[in-house]
Image 1 (cartoon, one colour):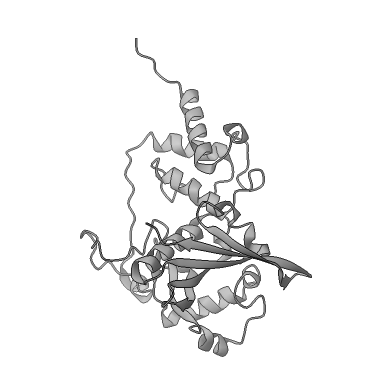
Image 2 (image 1 turned 180 degrees about the horizontal axis):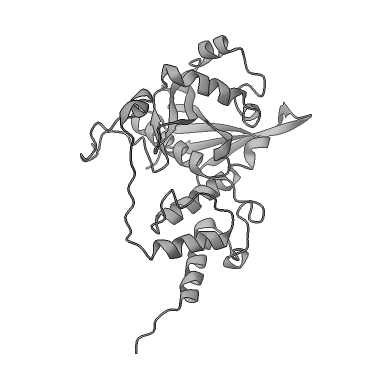
Length: 282
């Protein structure tokens, strides 16, 4: 006797699988649950969610505008009704070339010694002269600047350009895979190669907040650093007002090695600073 699972049974199986990926109870994931307001998924949770969707054939285009668990499960259902083929198009032409994005080597196997600097959402490329206006706008944007190096007090443009490479080991612009447009910056700084450690940071345009995509680009950058430099661990210094963006990764994706109590002043109060470390993968 053959038993055919109903659509509702399959949906509940997906719900249980998603709950395991997010380390939640399936009962906490009803269709109406909102990803951020109800479940308080942070950037790393969203990265896990996006990876879970990708593993089930959901393309990056389909994932835009997700707000509730029901929408997530609906995407998986639709993906199962079409061939499981997704194509990532890297742009050619003047716009791509101006942003340092080309199709050189397309169609050839990836050299195992070459670092991986692209995923479905972003390409990591060197800074171009034309990126400076974007980077300055990013550093001064009111939704971003207080989370970044200048804490809401950016320098004039000429000093910003001069300071851009201070204490930096390497920094790369994250560009959208589809258009090659700049979206953010990832940076390694204060490197001590003799002892095998450095600090890392990332900043992205406000529209990417909470999507998990910047966390994916940062993970690419982390793998690139361990691949390229004799580093054994990377430090993240996370002030308390940024902690809610990454806290789900503690003990799972990074280790909290210390907390500096009431260390950073912002918005009328003092905040703890979390000192976190990512260790070189085995």
